[in-house]
Length: 255
Image (cartoon, rainbow, N blue to C red; front, side, top):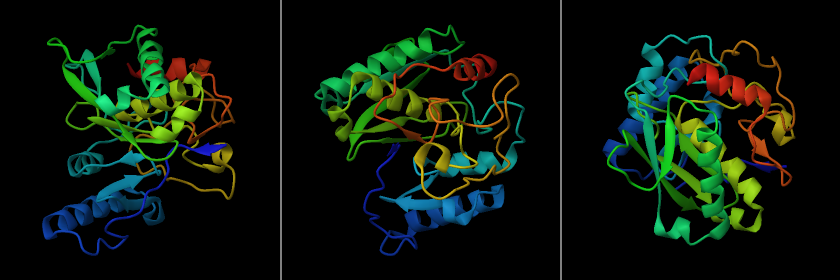
C-alpha cells in the first residue's frame, strides 16, 4: 500500500519558524479555526507554508472560516464546503510539466471521464474554455501521491498536485490518484477518515469528524474496506481507477 501524499520537507517547521509575519499569522488563524471546528491538533500540519489536514487536503483561510460557520448535512464523508449550483463546468488545466509525464496525462483524461460518465450536475473538461465556471490547475509535485484542498466560496479547490513518481505506475493507478484528488477539490473527505490504517496500514489514526460533514450518505457502507472506495486514504499498486458502487451512490447523492 502507498500513502496518497508524500510529505515534503517542512520549509517553515511545525511552529512556522522563519515564515513571514503575514503568512505566519494567517496559518496560525487557519490552525486555530481547524482546532475550533474539531480537527485533532496532531492531524494538522504545515508543509511548504501551507496548512494540511488528513495529509493531503490543503485548507485555505476562507475554507477554514466556512467550516466554522456551516452545519453539516447528511452526505457521505464530505466537508460542508461543496461546489455551488452556479458551477456546472470545471476546466482542469494541466501545466506543460504535467503534460510531459505520459501516465499522469493519461490518468487525467481517465479521471475526467470517471466524473463525466456519472452525468452529474458538474462536468469536467481538460484545458481552458470560455464556458467553464471554475478552473483547477493540475500540476506536479515530488513523490508518488497527490494533494489538493477543499472547496470554498462555492468553487472547487483551484489546484491538484500529482507526484511525478506516479509515472512508474500504471495508467489505472494514475487515474485513481487523480480522481481521488479531484474528489477532495469538490468536497469529499477520505472514506476511512476515522481509521486511516484501514487503507494505509500501521497504527490506527483518526482524522476526526470535525463537525464539517463527515456523515454517512444513505445507501453506502458504514465502514471502509481495502479497495472499497477511490476516496480511501491510501492506494495500492493494483488499483483499477474505477468508481465502486458506493462511490457512485455518494457522487450522485451530492452532485
